[in-house]
Image (cartoon, rainbow, N blue to C red):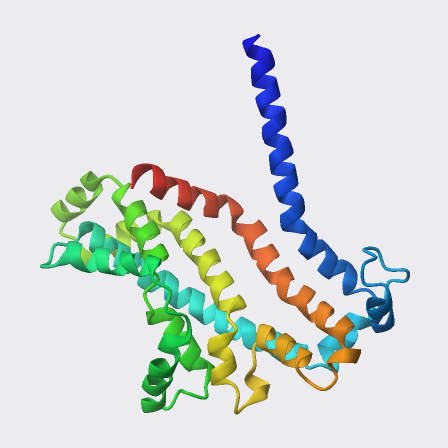
Length: 282
């Protein structure tokens, strides 16, 4: 009897997961299928999932004619430098809050964590623009990168601190006996052990910087050639050619989804390991 209940509970669980997966994957599937349709077919038969005729030319036109090649390079530029900077600042901050001793440590840590529950939205946009204007980066992608790197993300800090806390302190004590300073311990001992959490933070940061729209849009209004891919796709939709460019927009959207899927598939194992280690032992 118990085994039957166990089998039934598993069947129900997998059915629920299947339904959730269908809802989550349907927009992605529809986007990829729509990217192979002609513009006229999208307007007349948009509800049909499978195209009558696969038009691979959409990707060629989106890449060349709609300038998506330049948009993609801009997105890669922002994402690569943002991810590298966020990993460094997040892991160092997590190490300092986990192992460091300084006045007000708990207060500052919980103040940063409290920002997880406060959504300021676009309220910080103007102050950030003014700060970047002072250093003459208000029309540069470097301004977007600096904001991504130094705007402390509470989730990344929480994950990195929890992961460092899961590392035995005996390793630190052994390193101190060998003559290592506080930051030498981080560089030679803690940082090499933080590969899983670095992958986790890297994926979260890549997703955030790749999908960011409002900040890059404001910073590139005066220089459209510097637009990242997400801004370029939306900008195409709001242009006068929108009625005849749905095929290009869907192709561009599909292009913007592919890198995120590839990154996640490549680092999925480290991503899960970084999350579970911090949550279980943090």
